[in-house]
Image 1 (spheres, helix red, strand yellow):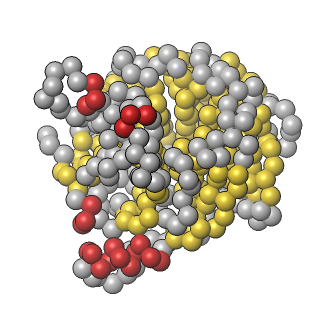
Image 2 (tube, rainbow, N blue to C red):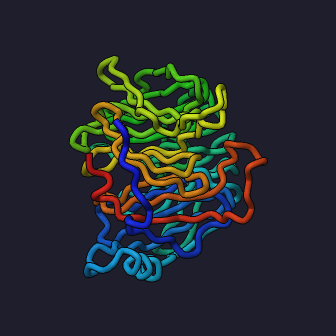
Length: 360
């Protein structure tokens, strides 16, 4: 089955003002409890930004080109920026949307209290911190942090020391949380699963059969509530879905691998840099070093749609909680070494209306 190619001229999207000066490592929309829609971004330049983003869906019908022009000029407000002590690898929101957590290469996790505009240290590791995720359960809440020091720590934010520290099989590359599960991907193509019902308890470790290194992970949820599988993207253009309760597993067909006329040409494989599930339609979106956004069915892995290449790598993406918007960041990810770096292409963050294109 051939995927439908989406021409960018027929999709409403716009750039955010005042993006970071270096590649974006993480994008996260604010939680659904918020009345307004906010987007947080972390960057290799050591900065964390957030914007108020307004959907243009209430605009009257116009020609697409005219709509694009108006959207670009009036639907986002840059609300603030903070700098940390090193490149920022990940961000997440507090459940009430009043705070932003940032995981840094300086071995710390900071929290930005938006009301007071102050930042405070809330977690530390002995190596760069790769991930930060809020865990909210019926009987407790905590911050989960994964690091290149080969540990994951769970923090009660009222205490100065971690409640639990667990050794990982290797350095942490990514993580996701969907109650009652948490997952961390590591080097060695491993995924460590935790049960969250009675406090974080290590459950099992899965090993990917793919040749590439794990790059990104998200839970696949049934009815958008209960996690039934994990979707993992890797550095060689592949992604697959592994079910938690059974041995069922399948690839997302095509993903970020392109046919080449030259035999053994390795340049047709592009890293899958991020993967996320649409909150309404349950489809998966992937973004990669090829500059392409792809949509895939979680039922069989078939590619549904893809956008035309943006001309530079897409490093991160996220859906808004209402499923109306997809944010994605463009910037060089060094997956093809310094030889293909183009200093004239500056980092950008774009938001596009996605409710229709994400439908299965």
